[in-house]
Length: 222
Image (cartoon, rainbow, N blue to C red; front, side, top):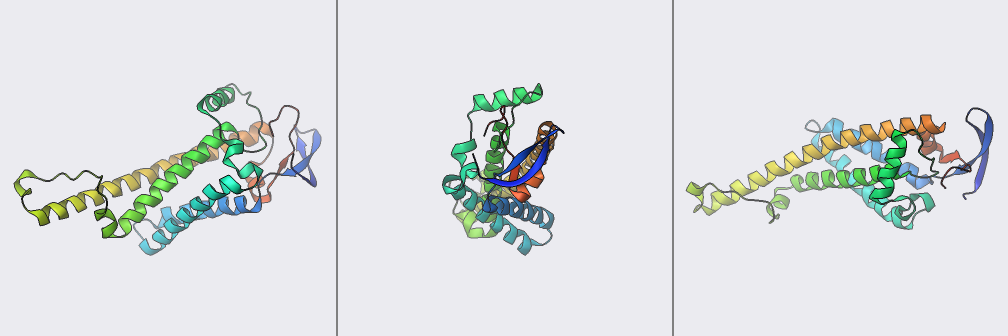
């Protein structure tokens, strides 16, 4: 159990319970920094390319930090604490659909799956953006398909240029698709936070600012 930090909050509108520290300062800084970096990257796409690239590098750096902190960080930041298998995740989603899911002090199984989905998709978006940043990076990719028109197959220069342009086009399409997928994931994430906040009578967004949540009750999982 985490250390009590004082204060009280209403549970079920009647009884007050002690607040406990769940999210450490680095996790909270990471969370809101990632929100800001992604928002800036999205808003500056195709308009302010230098700022877009800086935001993309910020996203990549934040992901690297989160991966490391997920191994050596505080209890509720560690992947080993909250990651669940498909069976547990689908079981929890089923309980959510029936309105009887249990409250988790840290990430619940659905939230854990969302963390993984967001990190993977953000990583793919950052990687494809980085590859498009310099022509030489695209040229170095040997495993992307290079389809050359038969009439020009014997013109080595054309083949190389055509293949590079095709790779760049494919990367751009993947990059934009991943960015759109991220918007869907963010919407689902916000919806899940709102639903869990309503079901369990606590403000989860505020807890990511203060780091504190209501202590675990008899039916909760800590």
